Image (spheres, rainbow, N blue to C red):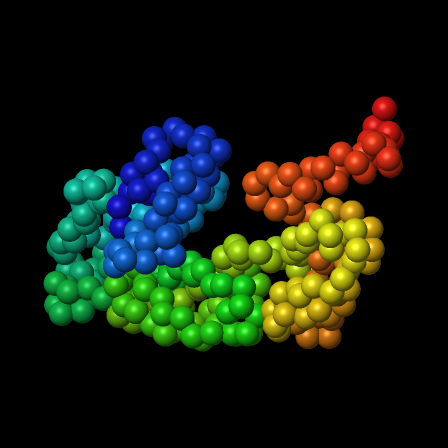
Length: 321
């Protein structure tokens, strides 16, 4: 993966706010839902998210800047501590990329000669699992507790209906691999789905996991408020004055709502249990009426309002001073 600073287009000395702003702009620009005809959009979006996971996190950013982790968040091998070892000839040289290259040569007593033997030297550095074999020319190291982070993280956007009802979505991994993923019904924005063994692999290690962070896309008219939903309902001027029954959209299909006479714009009605269908405590749907006038000028309506204004004056802003 490229340098995360390069991916987000920010300098190394950028502030946390600048990094956050750059990430939001790029994530919005390259989101797969906004680039459905671009097959590379998902890979770019995943790369942007991975970069933000490194330098958008204060602790990981410090580790990356110090060279302790790479651009994928994996630990870097920093070389062996110290410059020499007793009981043999061990020399450390700075190699490409700042890593130290060590050449082991046997001393007069051979690899197993000297104080404690070379096996003890390996054990002191790597633990009891370090072994020398092949006549002192081949080495096998069991690093024990030094683990590799083989997990992969990707972001997935689902519609509100998919989050409520569940769905099967296809996700593209940073490795280029594609998977069909079942999104469980009732998933919430920000929730993570873990797929065991679907991460990266490395010899001698268990496969990592795939972590999918779910985001619910904005809905054309519903707004999510916890377990509740909110929707603005356009009504006519005569429906507001005379009252009537109007159809209101819900996740389960449209229902009828009775609008009382003299309903002001902004009045909110509660439809119990018509919000998000969470187990045990389904949310409610809050419907806010908005009076919408017809497009264009209507001479008859204007004449009626002028007559009404002259005969029935009132001031709804009297409390504002």
